[in-house]
Amino acid sequence: MAIYTKDLGGPLLASVSRSFYLSIRLLPRKLRAPVGLAYLLARASDTIADSADVPEETRLGHLTAFTRMIRTGKADGLAELQHEIHTPHQGETMLLCNLDRCIQWLGHLDGKDRAEVVDVLEKIIRGQTRDLERFGGGHHVVALQSAEELDEYTYLVAGCVGEFWTRVCLNHLPNCSTLGLAELRRLGAEYGKGLQLVNILRDFTTDLRQGRCYLPEPELRAAGTSPTPLLDAPEKAQPVFDHWRKRAATQLDAGYEYIATLRYARLRIACFLPWYLGLRTLRLLGKPGVLERTNKVKVSRTTVRFAFVYAIASAFSEGALGWSRRRAAPK
Image 1 (cartoon, rainbow, N blue to C red):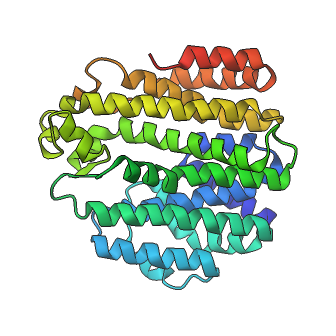
Image 2 (image 1 turned 180 degrees about the horizontal axis):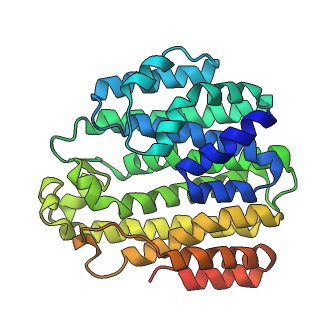
């Protein structure tokens, strides 16, 4: 397995996500392979789902075939997938070219780790499949129909990742937390859902232009608007947007509780970084006029650099963790 980890879990992972690659490098060695491979496979399924120039039915077929590959360890249908799915992202192209080796790597994992990776990928792909079926070709704006649909979506594509992370950590490091599996898994799921909700809010206007509205339609209508008019006046969604921004902040509070229970400095640092940057992004999303901006909200490079400093301090100090929370908390 060392061969797979060296060239796939290193350069390939770095090519698709420099920040996540750094987080993986911070993890205790036992956790790097299952977490790194799960990320690569999830990134591949995301690339399939997001290939907008490929017909919806074709993408759905490839997601089904990819699920089967992950479940069986056999690369049946991979050649067709690689031929029909294209992406302008160089790292993602490299990932698609190496999917057969990722599938082989999955077969080399420890039995428990493999089962966990298969389970979380099946949930993620289920969420991506429902997303494609729900929004179709993006010819007109379609919104989710309830808060429950939004909660389910954030669980399937991110909350389940928090559960996966928790189970893998406890499998390899049984004493990594002061909490038991059930409560830590609950916090992990809420933390993951919060991070996904931050992404949804950050991409709100971009998604509208692609025919997707993740804010529930009944809530928008109660606020005096509906999905299609938001294309020209996204600011009319502000009350609903603010409601879900507060919900994301509450879910990220679970991330704080999660981090505070961890006994290993490396784990705390790896969990701290997305939590802190998520909070800082929520803070930016609370500024006046954010829904009228044409450019995407992003934290600055300076914020990212300081996040690493705060992460190291918070790994060894409860006071530093609390200070970081107060500094980043959305207003």
